[in-house]
Length: 308
Length: 306
Image 1: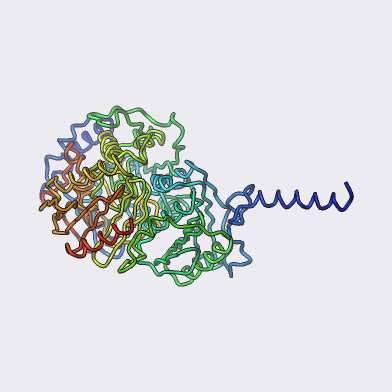
Image 2: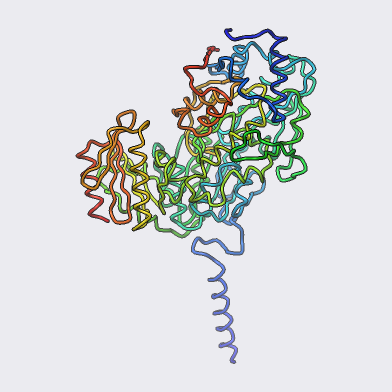
C-alpha cells in the first residue's frame, strides 16, 4: 500500500497526533500532508465489506495498539432502515479491536437504551463483550469544555468527558441524507459526543428565516471536528436513506459499501458522491478542506476498493 | 324551573360541553394524541407493542434528534409514536404528527414523499413506498414504517394506516399556492410545498448561498423540467430575492451564459441545464430543464393566473 508507514512509526506519530487533536492541540495540517487513503469494502455481506475496508488500510493493528482503551461512536439516531449504523459492521469493528488486543472497548452514546435495543446494536455490544455506556445528553457535568482552535463559529465545544479516558477513538457513522445540510457523514457524527445544549447553538435563533443559518451550522460542525480527531472512521454505506434524512423513513440507496479512512474530509467526500453530491457543494466538506482538516478532491485521494 | 325545563337545560349544557371538548378530528381536546391510535381489535393480528410515546413542541428534538427542524419550520404541534407487532415478530411503527394546520401537514407530506411511491387511497393523499407509507388528513401527517420489506409487513402498514385514517374524521384544505400550478403536464406526485429556509434549500439547492427569501413556495416537475414558484411578497422582498437569484446566475463557477431580457433572466448550469426566472407582482417564478419556448409558455401560463 503506497504511503504506508511502519507500524511502530505509525503508532508513534498517529497516537501522538490523535491524542493531541482530541485535546484540541493538534496541528491538523500535519495530518493532510500524506496522500489520503479511502478504503472501500464492497459486497453484499456488510461484515466482510467492513473487514475488507480495514484490511485495505493495513489492518486494525495499525490503529488499535495492544492493551489500548477503545471508544466507539456509532449512529443510532433513528431505527428506520438506512438511518443507523448496521449491527453487523459494529460487530466486525468490535471483533477486530479485540483481536488487536484492546483491553477496553466502550460504545459511547447520548441516545437512550431503547434506540440501541430497537436497532439491534445493544445485542451486538453485549454478544461481543464490549460495554455500552449511555450518558444523559442534558447533564452538563458529564461534558468537558474544549477550546476550539481556529473556531470560527464555535469558540468552545463541550465533549463527553468519558471520551478522554480512551486511547483510541473509532468513529462509525452511517452516511445519509440530511434535510438541513443535505449530507451526514463522519464529521456530523461527532455531534453525538457534544453537549446537547451546545449542539442547539449550531442553529441561529432565527434559523427558520436566516439564509446564513445553514452555513453557520456547517461551520460549527467543522469547528467541532477541530477538537476531536478520530483514530479511524468506518462508515456504513451499505444501505442508507437518500431522502427525508436524517431520521427517515426515506428512499433507500444500496451501494453495499463500507468506507474507511483516517481523513474525514476525504471519506465524507467519497460518501457524498454515493449520494450523487459533489463534495464542494456540501459546505461542511468544502470548509473542512479549506481549513486544513483533510482533502476533499477525490482526484488527490488514493481510493482503494476490495470486492468481498 | 319545571322538571322538564330543568332536564332540557341540563341536556343543552351537556351538549355544549361535548361540542367544545371534541375537535373536528374526533379527538378529545383533553385526551392526548393517543386517542387516534388504532386498537388491536381492528388490526387483524397486529397488536400494540409497548406504550405510546408523545412529544410536544420542541420536545420533538428528543424523538428526532437532528431532524426535528423541518417539522418545526412547517409548524409542528405534537406527535405520538406507537409500535405494532404480530405474533410472528413482524413490526411496524406508527407516527402521528399533529401539525399547526392542514397546510403544514400537507407540506410535510410532500416533503416526506418522493412521488416514486404507489399512490394509495388514504386520507387526503397517500403514497406507499417499499417499506413505509405516508398520508395526510386534516392537520395530521401519518407515517407508518415497516422494518423490512416482507409482504406481511407491507400488509401490516396498510392495515394500521386504514384504521388511523378512520380515526381522523376531519379534512383540511391544502395551501392555495398549489392551485397556481398549471395542470397540464404536472407530475402531481412531485409537488413539494415549503414554508421556510430548510424547505427552500431542499426544493431549490441553488438558493442556499444567496438571500432568496420566500414566505412559502412550491416546486413541481413537468416532464424533464421543474417549476419553482416563490411567494416573496411585493415590493422590497421580491426585489431583493430576484436580485439574489440574479447574482447566483451571474456568479460564475456554477452558472454560465447569463442573459437578461424581456424582464426575465436565464443561465445554464455546469451540466448545461437551462434556468430561467422572472418576477410577477410578489412572486418569483423559476424554471429549470426546459427548452426556452416551453419555459416561456409555462411562465406565461402562470403569469395569467397571478
